[in-house]
Image 1 (cartoon, rainbow, N blue to C red):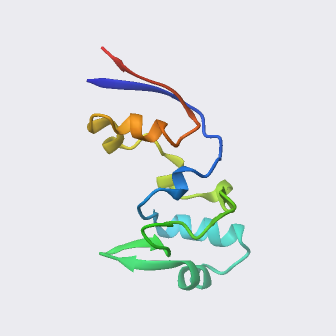
Image 2 (image 1 turned 120 degrees about the vertical axis):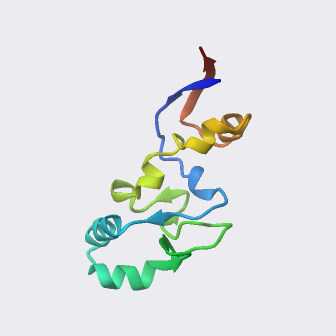
Image 3 (image 1 turned 180 degrees about the vertical axis):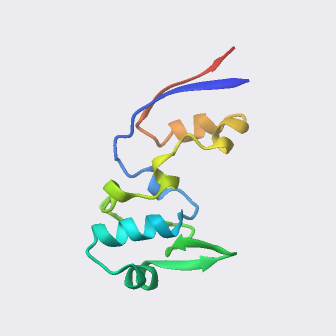
Length: 116
């Protein structure tokens, strides 16, 4: 089964409110630090942490992103690739019903359908 979706991000912040973590790499950390007018090392110390060998934004499972304020991403212009590529993650197409779950909160998905 292949799925096709019609998607355009509305920057509503609903995906940012879902359970999970936001992982970043050092290049993304540099870009976010520059956007915030910070040194990279200060950004890393204040906003990131190591987790199982990876770098992630500080937060918790219920509110994974510390850059979400009033349902808006304050670093949207330099958001991590994990955020930029949502909802086009492999796992969203691998499991039956996953896109329906995402459509329940994502205003950007207009159509999700099976294609041959």
